[in-house]
Amino acid sequence: MRFLIFIVTTIMFFSCDNFSDRKKIAFAKNPVIAHRGAWKTNKLPQNSIASLKEAIKLNCHASEFDVRMTKDEVLIVAHDKDFKGLLIEETDYKELAKTNLFNEEKLPTLKEYLLAGMENNATTGFVIEIKPTSSKEKNILITDKVLNLVKELKANRFIVSYISFNFNILKRIIEKNPTAKTQYLDGSKSPETLKENGITGLDYLIYKLKIKPQFIQEAKNIGITLNAWTANAVQDIDWLLANEFDYITTNEPELVFERIKKSPVKDGCKLVWSDEFNYKGKPDPKKWNYDYGFIANREEQYYTDRLKNARVESGKLILEAHKESIANKDYNNPVFLKKSWKKYAAERKVGTYTSARLTTKSLASWKYGRIEVSAKLPKGVGLWPAIWMLGENKTAVGWPASGEIDIMEHVGFNSDSIFGTVHTKAYNHTKNTEQGKSIFIDKPYDTFHIFALEWTPEKMDFILNDTVYNTFRNEHLSTAEWPFDQKFYLILNVAVGGMLGGRKGIDDSIFPQQMVVDYVRVFQKEKY
Image (cartoon, rainbow, N blue to C red; front, side):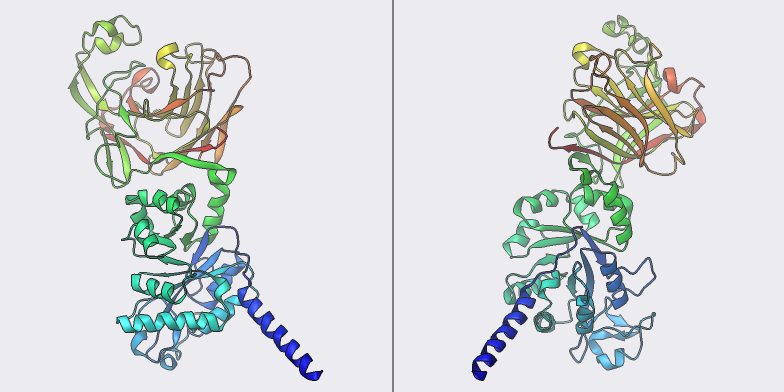
């Protein structure tokens, strides 16, 4: 009987032990990976147990850390090849451990680090970066030792992924543990290549993904995870959120949590169109068309498609206005001479300013959604930059029946304000009934601001950064008041002079002037 009880107890003991190894923690439902722990805000050492504990406290999805191997084959958590002037690979751990981290914490071994991270932690996983060594043999050794230690400590359930710049290290992990999650860091291989080699994700430097944005959709199509490092700037974090990355590796986890709350995707919107301008030369012809010549509003600029006036460089779209003479190709155009609003264009033999006006007409248009543009405005009296939209049916029904949505207008003689305005058949400037409001803008010429429209069947909100400053509601009367249940296309331009921009003249000393656009993004909900 005693023997039977012993056998049953032993079986239960080992069963529970195995179960604890298999039990998975409930990883926090956010994409935040604290890079080397959450160290920056509280000025903690990177890769310290203190920074790991802080990442757990913040409820990050995971904390990333770096593993190296000492001369006497002790696994430690450290990023650089050297520690306090000593090469880690050529120094015994006992010697390295004589000097503490700057918070007086001992240089942690991987075993100590894992045990500390597993204690009282039910939500934050580990992303383990295995640092390459000086030889293939040592790469195999460090990889096997990491996997063995994780198994020994029953830490598998905490591992979100293993990452490395060394492709063969990842392949060794897969060989030893085919179910392990892995991500490649180098950025040189396509998602298809990773998939073919059994690697389950990519973790690439942000700029590499921006110059090869096709990798994002390719990864989603074949089911490998998307991560990016190191996202510390608002514009990068917002871009990764907009593209619905699985993970965001950051030194600023608190900032990522803030941006998650403000991201359009949190409300069920998806990015349906964008231009991040991560190329050089002319604006992408698959996304942008040009308008030419004199257009309307008695504006003084002549629109061209020259690189001088519209180009992409250093990751930004530049629309540039110049003071210069240019021949008017529409001079004495009989069609224009018959149209009151175009007659001025046919009467001018020469233009005295040039600029650019880009449009998505015939390429992309949208009904409802969030249209968002990050831009820095041109400076000077006489300038009239705008981000706006026109209805697809304008050719058929004319303006203002087609509707106009001015997401952002700015005039140089009113340097601290922007305007958000709606024009319709019932509400327009020719009747002094346009529906618009202004808002103070700080440093419009020195700082990028986000100009946005959130448009639903019921209303339009005009937004500067995170502030709604004008709301236009659907009165459910007729298309004369609300012609906005149709698709609209987007326009970006810098005008010179004209009925609004030129009210206080033009300062010719300001030229050239640029509107610089960091990105354009359009989000929509599936039901639209």
